Length: 422
Ligand SMILES: *Cc1c(COP(=O)(O)O)cnc(C)c1O
Image (cartoon, rainbow, N blue to C red; front, side):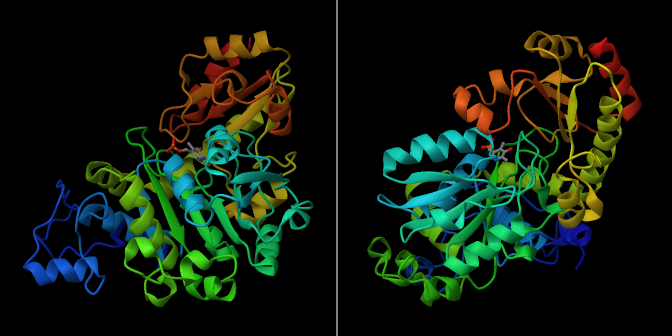
């Protein structure tokens, strides 16, 4: 089925329940069991069904199924935010003494989480260059549990060499995890290229209107076989889980990665998505492909305008032929479209501040993927927790301005930027 069709129908049968066309919000904490045996069966996974909204919820379940289908995955797990999706994806495979490999081009929140916070849990992160993965394989050892990267990175707007990363992951038997937030499921599907696990902040393009925080983890089909083949590394999936009465995940005919994340991490740490946010995301996902097309078309027009402007030193947008990522955008992304994210360089920090303060249609906001156009200075906001060295490595300067192009008419946005730059 095509994505546009899945986005509207996936995971929901309107002949069940009350027959409502809109997916109902199951605004409930818990569920009544038929009897004691039914309850026991649910806990023992002999029967599947909702138990408690921290673990599962019928509205969230529709979103999980729809999203898994959109990404071409076997299963999905919604969580409360993109950050918790990243944390759960890592904590699902790594523990004290382990390490992970992370891309040099990541979202600021992912950098602090993966280099500082998880260090406190004894998991260390080593950095590799995602543009060509030339230093990836040499850094992998028998304690390496995951390779984490962003398909289209925020805010550097760099595209990873997905094929090379996947090739090394497969060769060494290390799980690949791709944060696909910025490209979105409309432009790119990492699983089609062999990636094992996909995470998203659904707060961005999936929501598209800046009205809900959410995160999701999607896994490809066949991870049980992968864990069995690499059981020395992934013994948590092939050996009994003493916290779940000795369950061996690879023995269960359900998508293994999200099963373990749900039964152990969501159960114990509890960053569950509210049913209301799942419902909001079910509304917005219906128009995801339409919106991302328009965001991308607008952004290309604006990137071309900026490139021709004398006060703009350089423009970074993978849809521009001048971009070092142009070829990758053509290869990986639907119709070579490249989302609504643009960054550009001006002469000085003061010039960057002046543009941000003078733009009227652009709101000064750290979010991305909203229908409203946004502008931000990454070095002093989203990436202010990074030191000088980390900033340089991430390609963020004090003269960088980032735009998230919305759904307004591009003529108005160009006029606004023209004034702001004058
Ligand atoms: C925003 C973002 C996140 C974090 O998501 P939240 O929903 O804000 O927690 C993670 N990765 C990327 C690429 C993002 O843009």
